[in-house]
Image 1: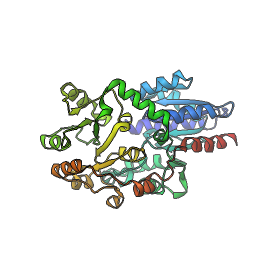
Image 2: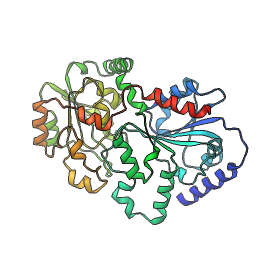
Image 3: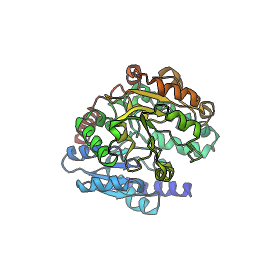
Image 4: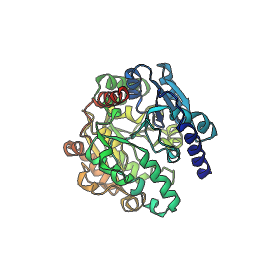
Length: 384
């Protein structure tokens, strides 16, 4: 089915390739709802005659509804025939196409003649490997590998926040260094915004009253291919090492069913808040405990960030699949913790993490003004 779908995309894009339709639209493909401020800023600054159209995945319908309330045109899409016959022709009249993820259909799209396709990734940095860095990619068929590379090659620009992330894309997608645009991630601007910080605190005080009065230890592991989660007695005991702290467990969106399940049995010290986003919770987090999640790159930007702990009990296995970025031990701001006893000791010690080198490496251009830079850069392109 994938092959047939890709060929249909190629056919419909080819039929529209030579049509002399007026180039009038800017497309944003949205599968993560964490970049709304950038989308609204882009819509506000577009040159006259240009319209922004957001194609969104069903998982971000709430965020799409918010955009619609501001007058942004939003269109739901799945990889189906409806999108091929209605969405692809719109894209072929576009001058800019922003993507926040890997979209398989791009492997069949004939690159619109007057368009730039821009990758605005959904994370500031990467610990996990992906693309060609993922060991399983080399085990796929040659046809699959060619299809993957066609998607990677479609991106004219990769907006990144550091040389380090540019290298990750260059190596993971086998694309030229010249495509990397060092401008910062627009989604990171919120962490420098007093208005956003105030709003996040208001949401927390409303939905989790009293939480901000405690030392908050946020445990936010990434998902595993097994798609399961277990809070073992040993891990729980380590997380609650400080009797005066509250431990908030926040799971990856793909594991939200476990969060909802555990939220029925919260205790005074271990709590689940499914109604609060991970990003909001960072505002009251004194100690972040994670493993391979990109949330670490966000937390390190916050002025109140105190300690960042990496609990990597399955490090050897994870290095094999899906793999970890090269030299990660050199740039982690704190050494990986391998056992519950090591985690317990680190939580009890409550030592402050020095983020200076970490942020210089990964957040070089994240300074609170990335949205302005990116919007101005691409609006100048549209005005040419």
